[in-house]
Amino acid sequence: MKELPFEHHLLELEKKIDELKSLSKAHFIDLSQEIQTLTAKLEKSKAETYSNLTAWQTAQLARHPRRPLTLDYIAALTEDFLELHGGRQWPDDHSIVGGLARFQGEPVVVVGHQKGRDTKENIHRNFGMPHPEGYRKALRLMKLAEKFDRPILSFIDTPGAYPGMEAEERGQAEAIARNILEMSRIRVPIVVIVIGEGGSGGAVAIGAGDAVLMLEHAIYSVISPEGCASILWKDASKAEEAARALKLTARDLLDLQVIDEMITEPLGGAHRDPKTTSGDVSDAIGRHLERLRAMTSDELLRLRYDKYRRMGVYTEKVNGE
Image 1 (cartoon, rainbow, N blue to C red):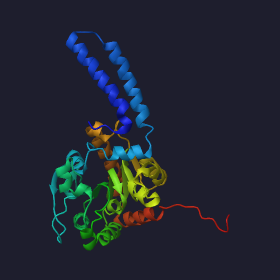
Image 2 (cartoon, rainbow, N blue to C red):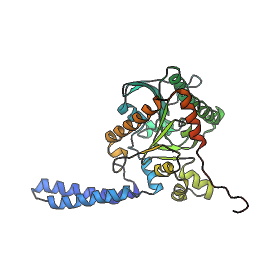
Image 3 (cartoon, rainbow, N blue to C red):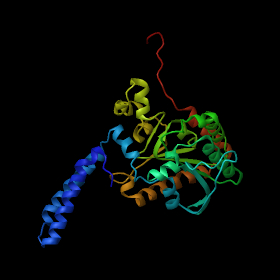
Image 4 (cartoon, rainbow, N blue to C red):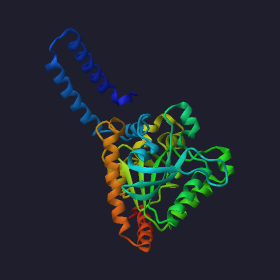
């Protein structure tokens, strides 16, 4: 498993425990006491490490290559998934996936960003960075959900929208703005789940929902820490300082009322126990869908509008007071 810089001491302890177990088995030596002592030390170190992550360490964990992706959650949470392709204007954008499915027996439409597991797949998925046609595909699916009265589940996991010239030529900004506008008035429940990276407008383009949930070690921000550091200080190496200032962790965003719920992850991150994580995500989605399904479409739209109007609390000084 890939080692993150702040996990080095934990992996060293795991390695020592494995060595003692191998030694005990190979030479018939009772090392159970030593193994038990090191195991207790490891568990204590894990608890201390993962309960005190910095914003930058959280960003690193959110980008872990083994972290569950959108298609992993769709497979774990839904049944009868039928992927639909294309936005009807350009070839299919593989960085956005979506289609019809059943969640806890109820028909839904799912959409989400999709990254890859290796270099080849990441190139195919454009590293989870959609072109305009990806957002247009997502919007087509959400309009389909509205037509057939199906709730929408939207999974966010992107560094941001693709910034290339061809994306700009095809109307990247318009596609993002159009999605936000249309999501604000779609008359079915929308539950958004930030599962990894939530980068800039590329995330918000499928993130304007009635309930916004976020995994404990995911991040959600107007810009990446590296991008912020490059703009503010002309130095990407100051990403750690930028991450702290951006308030991009789930706890920060819950305090700021940008998200509605933080879903706790297993110790060490979602990739350590995907099954438990999926179960917790399913429970959270189910609770919010039950609440939202009890509302009329007019109530949904009113509360959705109010939700986003309340964001952005600030203090204004008048005449220096």
